[in-house]
Image (cartoon, rainbow, N blue to C red; front, top):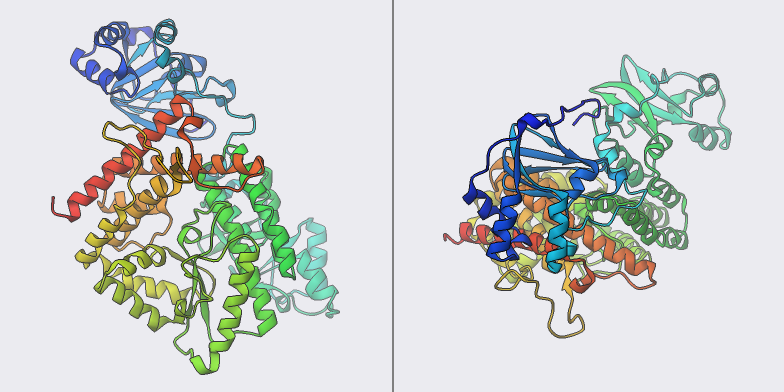
Length: 625
């Protein structure tokens, strides 16, 4: 909802007659907590429900009243929104007490999306329920207030368009402008960069740092044309893109100036300062420090700050989606810098290559605890005898450097330093054809890694053209997809016969749940199969689920439920790891359900239940059930 809108409040004349008794009884019985009440208690509660009808746009409830009352949505849709996020509810969803924070800072509001009917249990009745039924005391208590800084600046950046960061018209000049003239222009206009434009087209970018390092320090004649020291064809961002995309672009490429484009026309410039004034993350500056390093030891020092970055993001209440993208951006920056240092040591590459991240890095879903999965796609001009030694040295340097930075070697050796995963493009095409045509167990395991790939550095076309060819085949490969489903079902949520959590019963991790393999990996597997079934090139799991809903691979409701389940599970994992790192322990994925509140355990069971249901649906689809 636009903050400038003022929704109409609900009024007393919107009170309606008693709701359908059977419908309310069914909703009470299905509630994960209220359903545990006895028949008499549920009947008494049902009698306390006071239904009201609200017109589209009306405020259903807000602030303290929203957190104090229990509400059942009987018809229509309601949107719950605060400064951080929004959630769309459908009948017969519950909201209010036990779900909505009582923290005044949250400024939470429930608004009718269309005409709706809501039945309320007033605050007095909710308090009576807490006193009479101890099992409801925690379930109906408001969640812990968020910390003061937890307005998730990343979500703000996601909603904020880049155009809102543009503060002035771009300062432009011709490519033939001299260095002296450019310096005078930047001084007079009080800017740190100038854009090179000719006939309305952007050609390059020069910053004050370029003038110092590429001109003044190098003794270049002040009458030299600006184009001679410019960054030609600079990275740009569309004016309507989310500001968060600008943050990621700066972090991944260690840049501090990004031209803003409206089609082919440059309309402004944003800097790292513009973004960080909206969001105080250190990610951009950490990436900048990485770019400055000239030794492996320096990069190791920068990498040691990633754990602190994740901890600060968790403390700020950042979404799992945003945290994953930012942590991954730092891995990308480290990888790119290691490649630059490697090329400086071993010389320029004899043929083009693409350095390709796989797994969680490719999906932009990394945490501070990640091993490395990567490979190299070499141009088909590659000759093993002439070029093999160079690329072996470069790949080994980068993989060992990442290991030193905390991204440990892949136990399965799925890294570019392994000769098998450092091959020309045509060999990679043969690999994928073989995996699709002969999907034996090892092939299925490899596809779970190498169907999640993203180019980090080098010539990205080597990967993108290969991806397009492979995805043209996968929708028709029914046996391959069916076996992928069977392989995905080896990871099942830890739920018992009656929907209870079933932690490990023996071994080192007795009493814990593996958040990664028990919950997150199954969602990733589902999204991957949806993407392959539709031939969709998306790699990030949230993006895959959104595309799957658009293409009909899954219902919009199923996609929404899976995205919410993934966000909850991944967020729980990030917070768990942050708590361990703050306490001086290594981050892991093993969570004890007993460490969670009743409310969190209920959410965890709900998330696992969503995953299990969608797994079963997919199994029936591909097994002809």
